[in-house]
Every structure is written in C-alpha cells, then in structure tokens.
Amino acid sequence: MRVLYFASVRETIGVGEELLDVPPEVATVSALVDWLARDSAAHAAAFTDRGRLRAAIDGRFVPLDADLGAPGEVALFPPVTGG
Image (cartoon, rainbow, N blue to C red; front, side, top):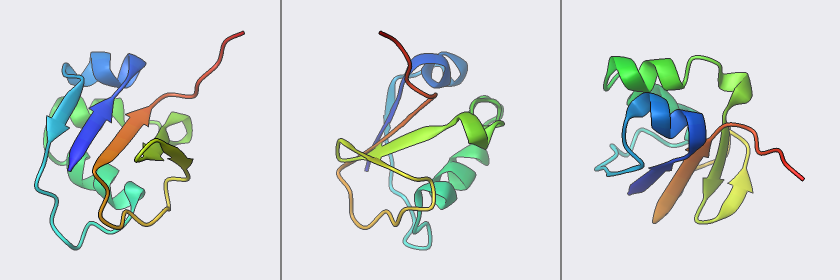
C-alpha cells in the first residue's frame, strides 16, 4: 500500500510517501495510524493529536474509523483550510 503524508504530517515524519506491506489485521485507517505510530518516534509525533488528523483512501475523504479494504493509496494530513 502507498501511504502519502501531507503538510505538517509530512514535515514531522520527514518523508512524503512510503510503500508498505501492511498486515491483514490492520483493518481501519485508525489501526493503520496506530501501526505506523509504533514504527518510529517521528510517526508517533505526527499522529499525536488524532483530532487534527484527516484521511483519504484512493482519493476519497474518509473518517479514521473507515475500513481500509485493499486500497492502492491512503493519504494522511491535517485539516484542510484556505480560501
């Protein structure tokens, strides 16, 4: 699975994307975030405030409790604002 990081999440982790072999027991976006947070201190720091974390699966915005299914891509980012 390709995991993309944007804005402050990318800055904290230090990379914009990773190709990962996610274990089958990681079934939701939230479980993916938990799994990634165990990977490194940078991942853990990027995901500290889950209330400020947003996600998209294959380009579609989803809540963190959304089922992963078998996505090609998951994006993780802070709330989007602008005008």
